[in-house]
Length: 405
Image (cartoon, rainbow, N blue to C red; front, side, top):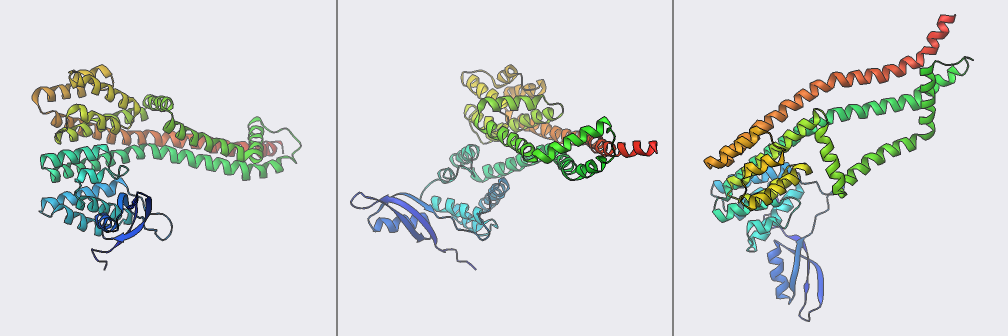
């Protein structure tokens, strides 16, 4: 069993007594202990970080949203039971199965032990703890309700992940079927049809139009398969990179997907659900509306709603009501606007936003089921036409020869 005070390796940067820059490695139970040791050696540190441990079989396991969600729930439960924060970090960190998550938790613990607030410690790891997470934790620390905020964060992340899974399910099925169709057609074109083509060459007669088209297409596949697959792969990769690097491309693609029949409806409902759920969570934590809108914009998952939310933030900061800004954006259904208006008038806007989020999360669930039921027969028909057309085209000359005989 590993001891709770086991040493780790830390890398450091700083300046010695003469002002010369130095850097190196040192073992210690935490970064604060390493800093003390270095100070005793006359080194003023500017950076001390725990060195990543190499793992067998390659790189470190990734830290997913599920890991952060479980960590938040466990930490909140322990704090609610009266366990001190630092001790809670120790228990949760040592018991975590993911080695990367274990290192992350113990690093946060070391920062807290050094005298930093939990918010400052979390901000050292922006990839795992985004602005929304840090803002809510900061609000919880200031109000003295950190365990309640951590419970809310865990609930928020669980619902967000459930929504994300539904969206992935809606897009995965047709994508997987299309990919399978491409693979099957490619195998037929490159390996099967050339065998028929060699046989047809001995017929000494013109081939039916469909058969000749398939033979010509097969020849093109055999001669230029690397170019065809290169163009397909390059197009997919290029669109992905273009969306990440170009704001204009991101605008175009996000607007286009909202206009796609059925799928666009799912994406629109998902964006509204994220908007409502995130704003509800921020409001419940006591975050001011203008400040909350920045995190809400980033959580929407679509740049169209991101831009609209940032515009609403500017309007709200000048005194405009939230419901009026939402109505002017023309992106929110009248029901959502009316619910927000009732919430503003009654002072229970977080409750109303929660109801909106619940409604639209259920709508996304129903829409995904409808999408799957609609796509199944359409995809089966598509595959039947493509594969069946190829089979018929290959056997047409044989049927023709049999009728002549």
